[in-house]
Image 1 (tube, helix red, strand yellow):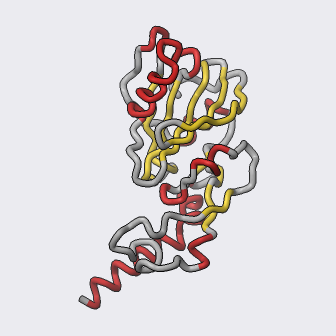
Image 2 (cartoon, rainbow, N blue to C red; image 1 turned 90 degrees about the horizontal axis):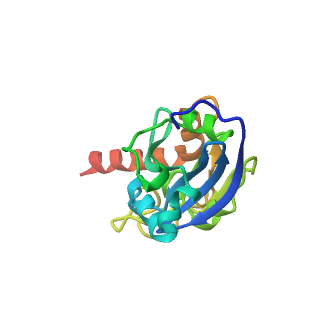
Length: 199
């Protein structure tokens, strides 16, 4: 991610590993993997590099030059990212935190965004650049106490079921986050506020 824009880059499909889906781009610098972990799974780049090392062994640098893990939280510039570069011989760089624009410059396309509660490995695996926004079911019942994002414990509302995700990051990451998550986020804030008022 610390290089200038490569002369070429191409999407190379996806693979799943250790509760995460990796979207891959081949570039003149090597293959970049953009990893999305499932809700509530640990999402550190080190964890995924270790899992890839178990799969590919000493051949890992031939398969990946960089691994970028999309965190579970959103910042001003899109999802919080954590990256590691894999050098020849398998040595791994220190962790650094690029922003979406830096990753997009290397892979040659906007970074796809899946809000953390809308990550489905099969949906992510089938994504391709230029694809329409994915529609999926959010993990609205994932909180045992209920009420954080969806209904208390029962069936989620219909408008919660069809939250859109995987919108490429364009002009403003705040707009992306607002478009994809506003319904759930506003309801969550409203419920917490309502609980505070009525205690």
